[in-house]
Length: 581
Ligand code: PPS
Image (cartoon, rainbow, N blue to C red; front, side):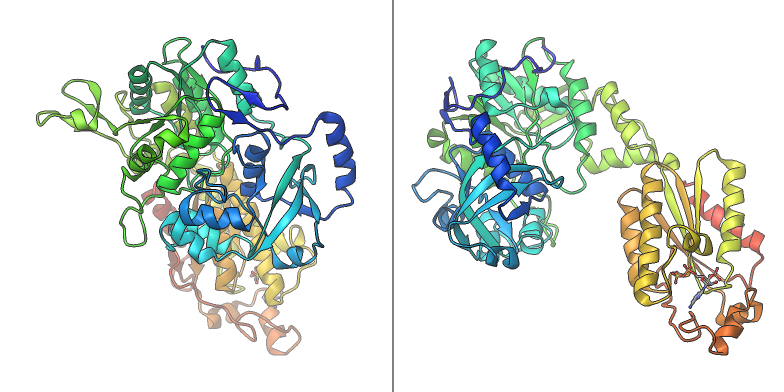
């Protein structure tokens, strides 16, 4: 069987009892009541869910977070944070909370109901607010993540991007958050349980992942399934994972390709809209409960499950086997069997994969880390067949082309008359002479005629101008093109913002055209310096408005010392050296 497909029965709204998983409670109202609530929701206070809240809501409504019936109130929250249990003692390790800002919380009256909407404004559920409380987020970070180090993505989110007030209460579901991607691979717990029942799958081992899967994962999952005599459910998290992870579109293409390499009718693929917190052991426990709700009888816990990587001092946040130990302690209570598995490694001398604990002294162990894989993709270097399947490599290479094909930005900055535009034109000519890649030029004057029409030269307007340039350039780079920008960009903060926008997709090459003011003023091609000196133009850069000199640009060129042709050669040679051109 290739994938669990559209043949699933539609979601059931009743309480379902499955062979595994116990009681499952969906929070959707029957259709006619949902319609009535949808109409009424328009008159309620409106809350737009962020991505994490949206993922949480989806799993609350479809029963993935059973037995929760809404966002945690104070008593449940306190006990979950302190000892991984709801107030009634039920095991639940992760605080599922609805955070809002103080102003919104203050606007709510007693017994308030609020409409929870997606960014398009579609009402998805109504929350009846039973509790409004101020959490101690530092204490939450320490208890849940074991640290307040913001290198931990869960901690950074909690401390820096989480509202200061939590709302607790029960939910009434109106409709599931709409998804338009991979719709045949998305299932509610009820749908999956039905599918398992219809297909006679009684023992099901679930595998969680947030990365593309390679041969080691295939070997691990096959062995785990064989060990417990179960079918395999590959259930990757596609809601929100660790920043910097391979996007889920690419990953799902890889999983589909990999599925062809499993024995027929032994493995199924289903996507989980989970917003991961990277909470290591606690998160692993949470993942197991979710998989139980989806009808799995077993759950694979590998090395460093849901680990967030290293802390600010370069030490791992969690012991790599802490998750396995924690789950073993709670296995009876969990209602799902844990299949702990060591890392699988490749022994070149035997041309096979082995669990790490079966490696012998004479074995030649090989591994390619995630970082090394990214480096090879980046450099266009070979990726051996023992590591992954050619179809998977092809998908990853399409998504991460070698550096020479990646987009980049040349960001010339300097005083008016410093030679930015002329140099930009000369470099443009070199790029077009030697390559076939599309180049977009965002010159200062040109941009102000179109993209930034109406903006002036106040600090605010100049920064808005540079942000617009940075945004357009980042889109060009995202599509694999080259953008050449040539604004004055006098303020460091705006240059940094443009750099950050671009670096999400490719290289940002800042070139400070460091021609001295006296030279620029002597050139005075547009007569603007004379006008500024005469007080006819106010706030002119270099005269009565500052130019904050770039501290660490990739290149610095003084056009009073070299010809335009020489300067262009210099830029072009640098690009060659960096394998960008
Ligand atoms: S900024 O600061 O980066 O937003 O400036 P930019 O968009 O590059 O626009 C600079 C061009 O606008 C003309 N001009 C001024 N420059 C600086 N200060 C003031 N007050 C000003 N008023 C008009 C000037 O011709 C700049 O063009 P270049 O090509 O840099 O000489």
